[in-house]
Length: 220
Image (cartoon, rainbow, N blue to C red; front, side):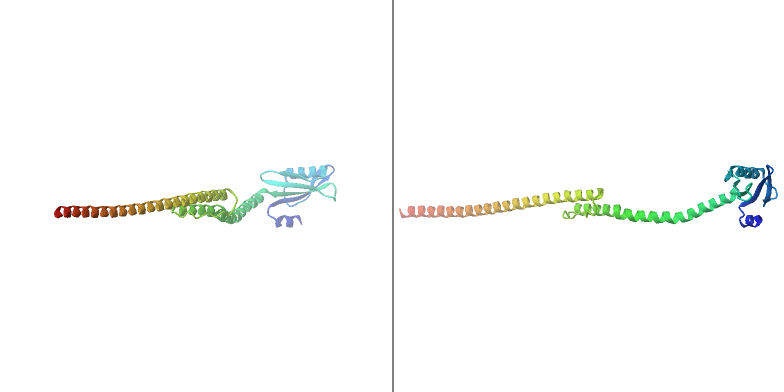
């Protein structure tokens, strides 16, 4: 019966069958003891339009559908909007309950992705700069991708390569200058030793000349 169907869903206010008898609307059957005039008018509109007619406000929603048999009758169902609002509230609650873990999961995935794509390359570049500043000029930053961070790592590697080349060239020049200075020092030492030898020979010659001069005087 209509009452059993209405009681099966508490959100249904009423189900009515309205029939036109002699041009007048008559409620043939209804689950409500007092049918609203708006419901009857809605049924009449559906019968005359031979199609579905809807009516909705903040309190209820009504749907009128013309019947095939008899052709001058229509069924009207009135549904309470409070149930729909409660369903919407439950839906929002469920959405929030399910959305929170999803948001946390997405945040975790974004963080992991950022670590792989941003944090780790930046950490590698910073570690390379610190090691280069400590004097290890042969260190190079890994270039895993060809993007902005990859361009930064490539530029850093090129700069370190040039600095290493300048350092190697400077060290080579220092070694050459040191070797030249060592050779000059050796030459100076040899010249000094030769000068000392000549001085000693000159001194011996002078002494021998003095002795000869004195011997000549004694002989006379």
